[in-house]
Length: 303
Ligand SMILES: [Zn+2]
Ligand SMILES: [Zn+2]
Figure 1 (cartoon, rainbow, N blue to C red):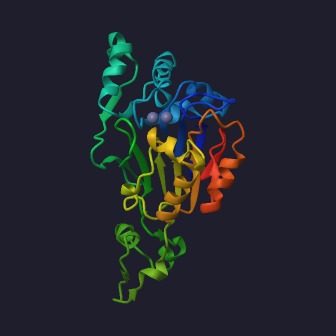
Figure 2 (figure 1 turned 90 degrees about the vertical axis):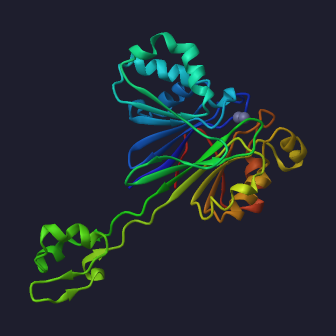
Figure 3 (figure 1 turned 45 degrees about the vertical axis):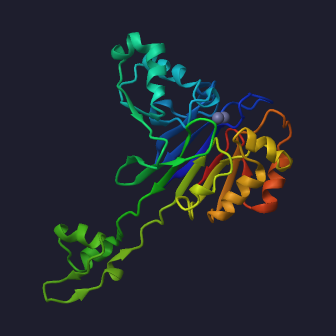
């Protein structure tokens, strides 16, 4: 079952060196979730052949333009493309008003429903949940209300071994109980232990997105043992003071965050326009957390 993250934009506030403002796509079992939608995101979707129509949920972290100025264009294109599926949008409450100012006059005439879910930036909450996945907000430390997002796969039912159904003549009506962990009692009152009938399900994985934020230990408990962490690293280590002043993080702080939460892998992104060559940022992060990688646009990371 697929669970991956594709980078569409990795630049900080200013686009630079062919890097674009922030956006990425989470693919969970061929369902696409967009996080942030900076200017030009539509073009990046085209460049990297992402199927726009499969995106049904868009999460906006905060209302700095580099994280949402591409949204109105995308919403408009969906109208032109005659989208009919509901589109769920999650973001700060004011985002709804911003959309109204721009497209309010024809919002009710769109061929699809745009369903807005305001995010409370004061405490973590569940934004989305179904049988396979749960998405929670993370409270970040930025100049304005900002939330990150953690995508957690749920533990699936145990996998039934098909041959055993025939071997023990297991009726259809008890299959769900066995998948939930029950033993099977046959017609002669023999107990067949669950372990003989099922295999372990796939281990649930998780991905956390933290941008934009200053170094933020208050989220460490919530993010313990996340498999893949995306954390902004706008600046290098020598700019720690500037980073703190601007409520951004350094490579070192991103790496220490990954280490503190016991992540398996770190992607750093939201790079300042002052850096043309990103290799030194990767090297610096790797010093503190070896499994650190740059958010290169177009690259896909398995969770
Ligand atoms: Zn930003
Ligand atoms: Zn920002």
